[in-house]
Image (cartoon, rainbow, N blue to C red; front, side):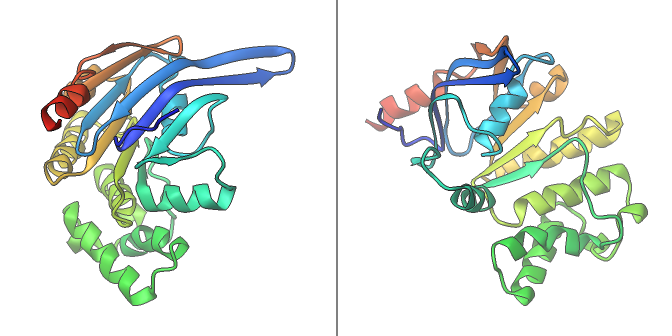
Length: 241
């Protein structure tokens, strides 16, 4: 089965969880292509399959059937270490909970992924400060989480996701733990990152958050039921050819 040149290419992806004698189908033959530079929201109610889809895109889970590739690199056949390296190199994660270390200053939180990538300490510190500057928190680099607001903590988490200069930023309910005003600030930051060329995929149940994206994919019962930008990739290839 040929893999496309898209950043993300999913072909006939199914995911079945076995719970004792019971099988639960979380995804049912999902095919999806995301080009570099897209800003995509994936929406659906609890149990729709959107989180399972995100976990597969982020190499946090593997499909039961189907082919998944990022930058043409198929996930199947890779060892756990190879998957971890690919994930660390290609994907930045932002979650609803900030997942920050309680006593570490912001710059140390941000540079953590670089240690797993074996980046030299001095370079790691420099890139962490650059990432904090990118999210507007340069002056808070030495502050611990307890000294930061919820919005600032999420910005630290976003800087941590950006520090490896990933191809794709995956955000799972990124405003879920924030008040409306702070959530707006975070979404404005995502808009800025998209304008700078970053590919964004946001998982959300919040329609207002989804409407900020350029493409909205709606899931229900493990399938895609609508895709507002589903023909964009095809049109792009038609023009290119």
